[in-house]
Length: 239
Ligand code: UDP
Image 1 (tube, rainbow, N blue to C red):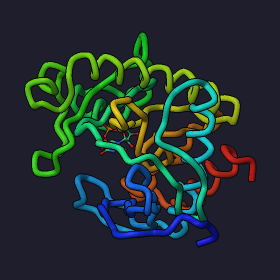
Image 2: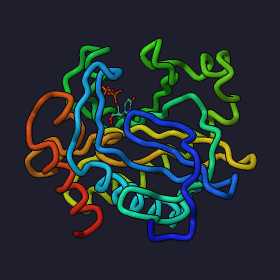
Image 3: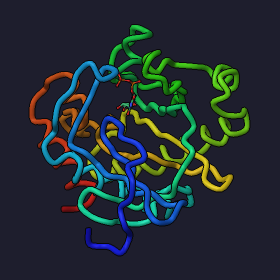
Image 4: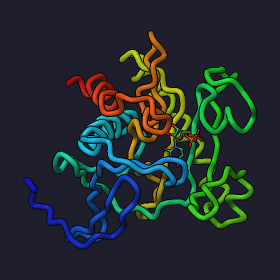
């Protein structure tokens, strides 16, 4: 590590990231791995170099969103695979925004991929591996004690603001933001955007060719997976 922050005990290991304590109880280190999973972890693999690229892409996007007044957990870059973030109590809901029909929405409703809804759609999924992260209504989220109606309303509003910012940012770089997943958490009573924003959590299509440049290349065995992540990083970070 090239920093004075000391990496402490591992708090949590997820499918793509590890969280470590630091000597400050309010701050944690988010470490990005190369491992990838899909279909509720039924498919597993490694995308060589993904952790480094996702750390870089997420950093760029968190800084962009902070600049637009959207509060995030991001504090600063630590190393190739690590960022320093505020410790959050994550709401057990995934907030998904969709600009085009794809993935589970296409499947569930029998719609063609690529169809444009009249306005961006917001969905909530309950984070529960045993149940396969089911789609839930806001009432269900309240019933489950996952968040209050007010917190859900705030997460929805933030998610749509994030969409406005990211849609424009990606468009300027020749990328179509099809859909993405966000996670929010509480830090000292404040709702912050957490987790990561990268090709693991966003669908990104090349505007000209409609080529998929995201985790669908891994999910659907489309090949050139590493190349897609590198291309997104190049366009987002200008490298
Ligand atoms: N997504 C994610 N994690 C999940 C589920 C979805 O990052 O556990 C992202 C996914 O990459 C896509 C968007 O959320 O950009 C919508 O995913 P969808 O509901 O279509 O599910 P999928 O068919 O991709 O599992």
